[in-house]
Length: 389
Image (cartoon, rainbow, N blue to C red; front, side, top):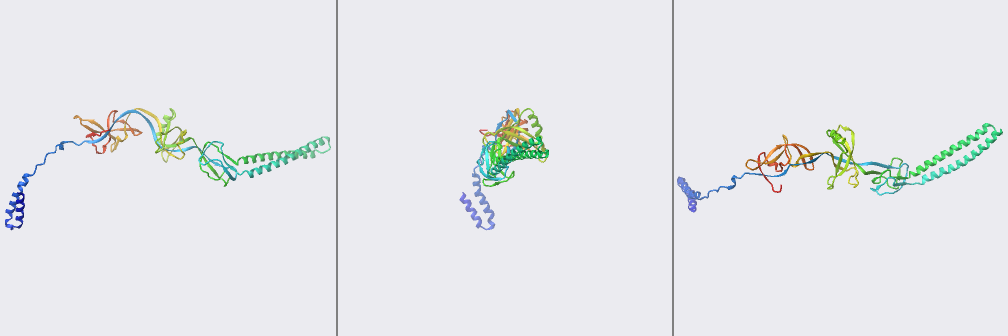
């Protein structure tokens, strides 16, 4: 039958236009059986199934949450000393390795002592001469005193010998002071550490000439203990002062990309002025730093713990969304037919600590909140909880 329909169609092409109606009828007659034989589409059984949004959920829980301020801080040395020489001279030798820990009183550098030793020897010789002259002047004064008492010499002659002896005594005292000063200068040829700390690199190497109070030989930083300095927004100042009045506040410093626990210290300083340019106030925590984890100049994440909020309702932070009307999240609840739906809840949030956000209003402990899938979720949408959530 299909072959006959095709033959009829071909014949219509070659016949005259007058016979066009007969050809069209023959063509339709041949195609009708084909249309009648076409199978009817079967109805899909899944057409009546409703779409459910796949979501990941978590439970709102109740726990004690620390009230804290999180900022970026900078590590500073507890004390910093730029070691200089008090005498000009050639640096003879260094007695420490660059980057070495030193104690107070450890020898760091020596200068060429020979010029100072020679100056001291010269002054000691001058003193010996002056002392001999003093002895002679005193002897003459004693002899002439007897002659004066005997009336052999005049008072003017006696006063001359006595004045000479007194002047010589002053010369001896000046010589002794000069010797003491020379010994002090000689002691400056040995440079000692003024504090416990860690040395930096040599600023001047042995063999160079150091100038008096001008040339920095080495910089020493005290890192046991050590400071962490940070700035807190001025609106938090009153709260910090309130809690500090109750007792010392704990400060934690966490090094970025360091998997270890944070270093712990105490808040020991609050600046007396708010920076008007930034609206912040400078604070400082003191850390024992016995493990040398904190290093001067290092940036750290600082947490200033103020108190603990008991019985707080918390949810994973990724559950909280921000919209035009403020913060909200989706709570999974069962409708009258037992179907799970995602319902939008406006919430009032508190602090965020370690990936969890405090919900002050809008959610109760035990509520099931959506943590993933909110982007395709509308209020009242039916949901399907993913396995493992």
